[in-house]
Image 1 (tube, rainbow, N blue to C red):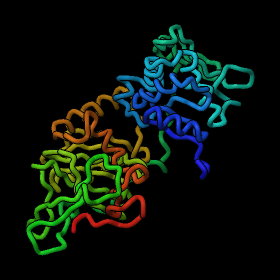
Image 2 (spheres, one colour):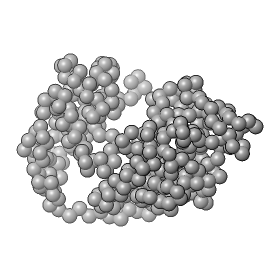
Image 3 (cartoon, one colour):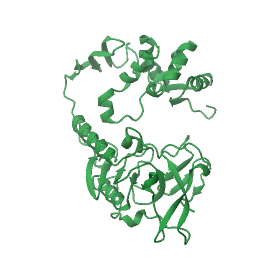
Image 4 (tube, one colour):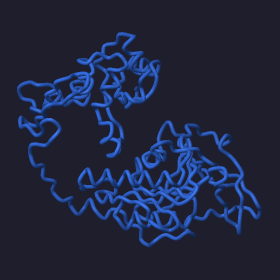
Length: 366
């Protein structure tokens, strides 16, 4: 807080929430992951002006299923927050924090007339939607045509791998002439910089370190989207076959690929590059599911229904590869487990493994 940071998108417990508020931090609460915090803040009787509700990185298929702010607001009300205050957290509080209250956040002269007509506050039953004073939706249906202009050329063709990758590009050479080596084997979510708990032995064959699927140990690579680097290490993820590659990689948006074999990893990354960015699931050298995200390698202008169908297929095919450690949404998890910021301690980048606390490079094997 002393450095000038004024807010945090928050998931945590009541003690952490109160500690942040006491230090003047604006909490952007992700309610789904902060039920205890909401209950605690209600019990503490706080002044809610320093709290907002937000949604963080929710993919299209999950948004279609559960919603966005409306879903988070329902959870807040379930945990004891009164409806009017809940709407305050989703509107004026956020507008004030981002210094936008002169334009949005309340109904008043001089503001944009962006309004929802809600007939049931707790169920968040929206009857009409107005944007700039014009009704654009009624009873869940659009009442106007919203034209989507084509994406400009400069945001396309942003994945520029100079030549197709091969299985050999993902090999990890053993530093010693022996049958096993030590390796850093990261779990999907490891928030320490201590190597000891994640150090294990891996077999060596023909001079190259091998993954161990019997222990759910996969190989993972981060491929620089401009073809300027490729970092490889070993992770305990669980895929028993195939590979999944995606150019949605917070915050660098390089290409991550998780694989049970090097050949499928190469096919998956090459296909991501061919479709100008996106998500690809491969098994036995065959593309099983994919979605193109050609706008910056992270977005698409295709219709929502089409996108949801493609993402559902991707999740279905990824589940068949048995991603035991990534939870119920493995592809979505893959988009953020390679963050290079706090609270992560040891991180994988396109330049290899690093200690995020010190900036020191770490060998993948030794």
